[in-house]
Image (tube, rainbow, N blue to C red; front, side):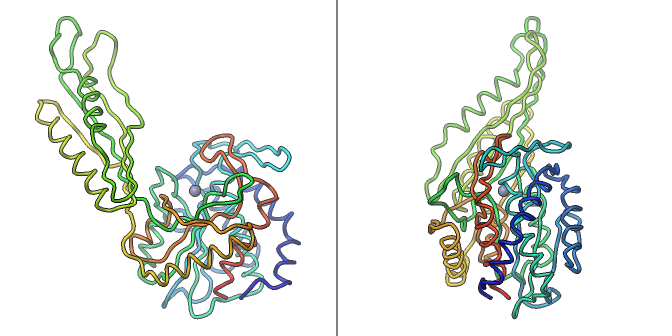
Amino acid sequence: MVLTKEILEHIEANSQEALDLLMELGKIPAPSNHEEKRAAFCKEWLEKQGAKGVYIDEALNVVYPVGNVESGPLVVFMAHTDVVFPDTEELPMRVEGNRLYCPGIGDDTIHVVAMLMAAKYIAQNNLVPKNVGMLIVANAGEEGLGNLKGCKKIFEKYGDRVTEFVTFDGPFGPQATRGKLAAIAVGSKRYKIEIDTEGGHSYSMFGNRNAIAYMASLIDTLYQIKVPTRGRTTFNVGLISGGTSVNTIAQHAEMLYEFRSDNREDLAEMEEHLNAALAFYATKGIKVTTTIVGNRPCGIEVDAERHNALITRTQATVEKHFGFVPTTGSASTDCNIPLSMGIPSVEVSCGRGGGAHTREEFIEIDSQLPGIKLAFELILHHM
Ligand SMILES: [Zn+2]
């Protein structure tokens, strides 16, 4: 189904409702792993529009099944409800000219709303996709510590039947005249590394091993690597802590370390380097404990013809509504899961904005309407 004049008129006529919905949903706190309130709101809202069979699963995904999802191929559309902010109170929101400021408003609330507006149209017109089932999912757990939990849950249940996956995520930049689609997965591994020693009094026990000194040395060793270059590979130590007081030889130190790559062999090489470093420090009579706190796979071979068809269709839709053809690139998103299973997937933006993952995050209000049209067109393509 293409966007007819009637559908475009419907979208325009509902633009105020969409903005109101964005302002209401955007204030509801939804830290990763605690999306209960947003999930309940989305389910109730969908039901009010006449959507049947909507449910919230164990991962806190809100799932709206459209057509036959019991057997046969499936297409999946997602936008995530969680935000990176730990707030449990209403998120602060303000309007300044064409900008709507609120933590999480672009990543990813504006996208959830675009998808919900399309879902409403489907429910009200009893639309059913042709030759395929559809899942419209306001998913949980996309951000850092959510570790793609919501998406993983959907693919655990429906995995091998999914033939196409689209996630609406991360706006184009302010006043954007160019942008990116993510169609290549960046994998990552994240670790908590702890070092424990005997420690002791800094004067009377001088000479005992100091956990902070060993941690500093380990970090230095990790930074000695020249990263492999089959793909784009990066690493980071993002947080360290440890010790007791100025006159205590530190007994404990810990850090968070990650590496990322869009190439599997590079990821494996980074892991080998880490393991070798850990083994080396473990021989020094100190206790080294490693806990994996995040693991996102990168992609495997995806059927090029079907993947390109999806990318080309998505690019054309962006061009139609935002006036430019986005390039394709890599990112760490919900696409990682289907791409790791060889399923054609793309991440696309439904708006413009900036300041993602900061409390000064905003969207451009006049980008909401083209974003909704974009979501409608991609979803209704299957009707
Ligand atoms: Zn996001």
